[in-house]
Image (cartoon, rainbow, N blue to C red):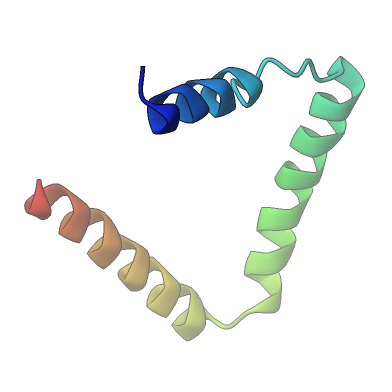
Length: 67
């Protein structure tokens, strides 16, 4: 086995993402997300929201057309 392949496999096993997260942490994160979006929408102008939405739409379509 090549040294690079072995190193790659070791890193993959080490960073597999099997780190458990607590339910309280998940709940707090979800609650913050539910509060943050609407309050941000209130704080920016309608024109800025439209600009952000158009940019997101272009990024989504660019990704699907490129495939």
